[in-house]
Image (cartoon, rainbow, N blue to C red; front, side, top):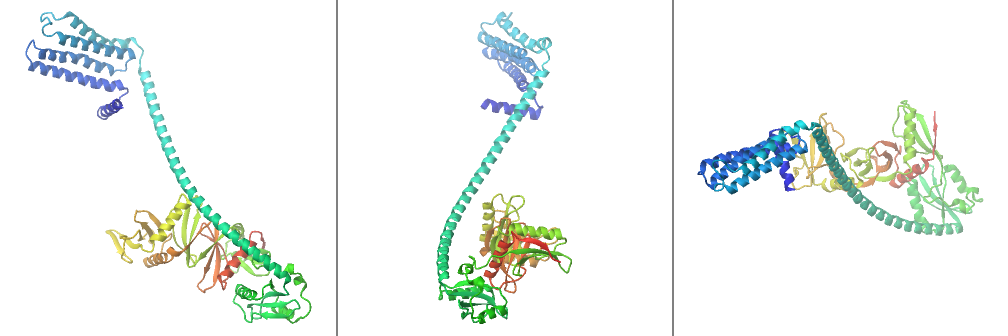
Length: 572
């Protein structure tokens, strides 16, 4: 390993100062040539500093004698030689080196000053001749080797490419490993959530079983009961209830009207606890007909004679059909509404469309998404988590008026990471200060807390379009939320920050599939619903307000039941 590092270092210096070498021998030749020159200079210096016929003078001669073979070898092996030429060059240098060693061993006593030692001189000369042959004669007698060097260079390049490819594959494997670890962590989180959901489902199943047992007990008592509860609308249009005996006599009545059918049913259930066994029959006959029934002492109506027929559905509603109606309004825009077979409109488009086909496509989205959509209570704000078209997870904070107060500003690779970002906002938003970045630094505004002591800071700024926006920056530098839209004035953006501060910590969270129902209370203190697609668009709304949240939930249930199978027709 040390040798490889030295070769890399020398090759690097050669390449930086001289040029890119074609072979390793080119770099070695350069250093041998320089080494030979250095030996020659040392020999001259040693000669000047030593006396004649001494060991020191012999070493000076030896250093000077070593210079020619090293210089010649350095020059020769830099050429593009065959292997034979390179071997001859190194062999010649080795023989010359042995001759110099022989000389040092016999000098000065065994060295004839007049003629010199023939063996030493011959061996030294043969070495020089071999080095010379390697650089002159061998290249002339052999084929050109440029092709070999080009092949060697191509092989070297190919090896480097393979090494790079291997490195890239290793990097990809590491990235896949990291992704697998992330997916494993997400899977573990999902397993934990599924276990919690399974426990909740088990609890719900146990509660449902208890409700079923109660329903069976009530059904058994229902068959033995001699009376029925009736829910109807009086002349003032208010829901009421009354308890009618089998002989037709009214034996109990609400005595007052209710603001909604749900509240009338609540009052009815309170009475049922004291009149256990009475069934519930919901009637929609006009008030005049209801009063006529009350005055009639004859047998009960045919449709109520069989106790089995009078047993209501599980939610107190008698199953019925509905139809989507497409129509053109006074402004020549196309709309749709979902009308129950009792004549009531239980949902509408909430907005007009430029063409009938657009309205029909919106209708199809409602039919597709309504049944599977979950509920979200917006009171007065709530978080929605959803997956965008790119497959990334995001969240947004919805106000009850339908406006998006803030969103994640970026997509997350997994639902758990999006939830972490949401939780970070909920935990830091209340204490976050407000800063207004300026040209000369950060001017602290708002509550004056700035970023000190807080986990995050609101930044209020003006964008390129001249609109004011805000973003919530965590103390680690990441932006964890932004306004999602611009405001015409700085005060409007500041008010939005205050609303987020107020609503975010306690807002409910719903994970949205393709769409979700949002149930909220409007400015008139009436309850409404809207169906919001995961892209943020509202594709349907209630079209009217309800006196209680339970009534709005009941209306959503009707839409979920009726919309998927409802036919559509065009109304003139």
